[in-house]
Image 1 (cartoon, rainbow, N blue to C red):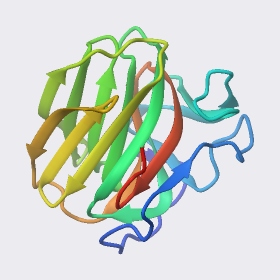
Image 2 (cartoon, rainbow, N blue to C red; image 1 turned 180 degrees about the vertical axis):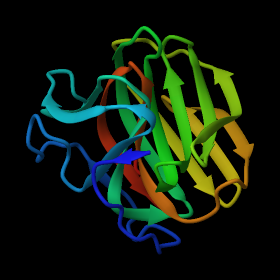
Image 3 (cartoon, rainbow, N blue to C red; image 1 turned 120 degrees about the vertical axis):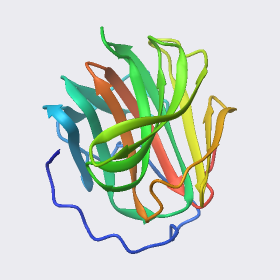
Length: 208
């Protein structure tokens, strides 16, 4: 596991805010977003940068992932909870191996966290847990994920119950107890995915 910054300690059981949204519009273009921790599980050198994009749901900026990494993540520093809601808008642009956009939660370090991801190449939504650097599938479901289009991915998690929705429709409901501690939240992608992210929202009740 590689990380660009040192993670802060995790102590909260729930988020202190009802909902907080990050559109990356106050961040410097060409740089990683301020207050985020970015890295990879496995090999590779993911590049996370803020860029201007005319198609952004909330203009002018987006968070862009490019280059290749086994599993690339970027999590919000200081945001930690055991239960909550996390949501993001993402746009899969290209990738021969993957065209994925995802969310992570209960991220305690780069080798231990949950993942929900939507994949334009496979046309599905998947739920995983990453434990000691090994990714395991919990459940997946077929879903329409068009490339070069914006989508909304949302995860609600409380105790062992996890619900994953894409564009307002719930595709996965599952129970899992592999990771129960409070952890950070963030975005995720895989392999050679070139993906844009915007309007990242987290809290006890993320606003749609």
